[in-house]
Length: 190
Length: 136
Image 1: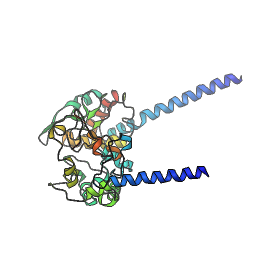
Image 2: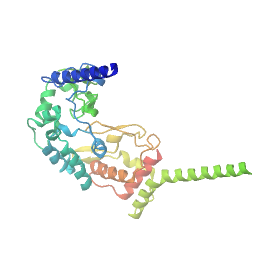
Image 3: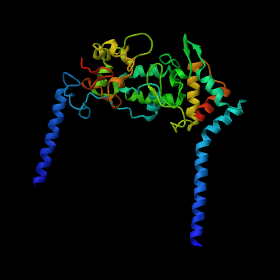
């Protein structure tokens, strides 16, 4: 009897905790994220990369960007022009390309439904040429106060495309702004 | 008698396992070299591979070599020229996974020769690079 009561109480507390987390996200994806990195996961996280072939093929040269970072149409343009991939020839075997595109398409920013993914899907992508994550409205808004010297002129970062250089949880889809650490600079919160 | 038999059995097993390990280590890349030979190349030279490694090529207004991304000490990590992503060491001695998957070797030789030299490498050049990486 007592055990059953404790279970019910425990469940209620967990539910309360979860709803508290949800409330805290209304005005800030990352609020509440001042806790340790382990505790920082919120619904603002992007779904991790689950396709190992994608991780191997695309992550061989750059950060394995989560599909939720770009809308499906943008992934289509990128994957269908791999022979001219941001200055590199990243051609893949056609069957493999189709497999990876299907994965990206099914989990794209406008398909996956997560909070941060939806933010990436909203707005538009500016600039000529291929769509870039760094040219999305949401990315630009989130990084507009980061000085150039922290990124482009920082030899340990070099580019806004190197997510994991400053976001320690990037590989797990955790881009919580309160966890940001700029190499050679330290914590940064805009 | 019994213990003698056991000793022989152990010895036979040891030789068998040793032979298997030997084949497993040598086969993938030897197949690749044989393929290049079938295309009219060979013999291959680690020295020639080492020289070609640092040879500079003018491509798209840049001076590029293998060392641009992989460095000159292949027992150490390299760095992708554009993205800055770490590239694990190429030397088999420090990174035993290297040269174990022929399809992977072919894929990267294909892509990286096109970026670095602005063209595909010849079977001779590819064989020399493989020998060089193998020798480290």
